[in-house]
Image 1 (spheres, helix red, strand yellow):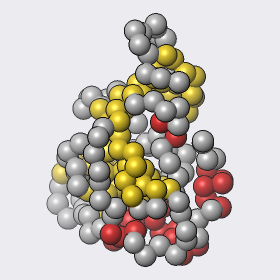
Image 2: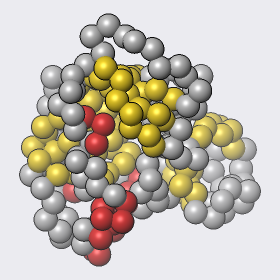
Image 3: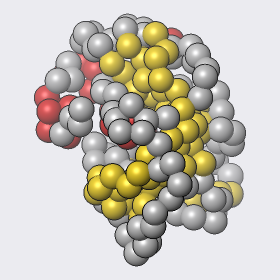
Image 4: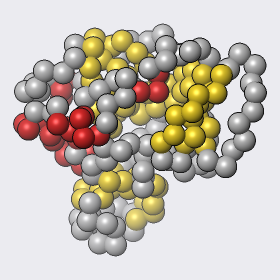
Amino acid sequence: MIIEPKDEWNQIHPQDLWVYNKLILNQRLRHLCGPTGVPVPFSGDYIVRPSMNLLGMGRFSRIETIKDSTDHFHPAEFWCEIFHGPHMSVDYQYKESKLVILGERDASDPLYKWKKWTKIDKKVKFPPILNNLVGAYEWINCEFIGDHLIEVHFRQNPDFRYGNSVAIPVWKGENIKKRENLVFVEDPDYLREGFYLDTL
């Protein structure tokens, strides 16, 4: 089931809205980060992205080399240290790890462009920072890079609603081809046309 951004937003308890602000979430997690206008502590590469993005798909996220000032970024963006390690999307049902998806992406591709998502047999501990939410949420989706929580949604991962264990995105401009043991499903979102799935 796909939850539209407006419905997702309207189900959030007002006191839990901080979770959807990635700057506030990362700051509370004590990640090295800051809003536009706050200089970085040392020169280097940082990830820059919108503080809030209910549309998802990594829109406008990018790696930038910052020497000092961040005044040139959009006021709604923030910068954060870059984490390394496997990128996982985890669905929790009542705080219990139910679905863990591992993402694959070519390092040279834009941050929105994923190569493949695969269901893996793994349990991931529920993030303690979310233990005292005010609202009651059956499903919470969290994204991690390595052991670092980077993003939270009060919904399930919509890309695995078909019961599939694999999802290979097809991007605009790519030809849709017949692939053995895979079926193409039209599922447009941003620059994505759909997926090759292993089951329907």
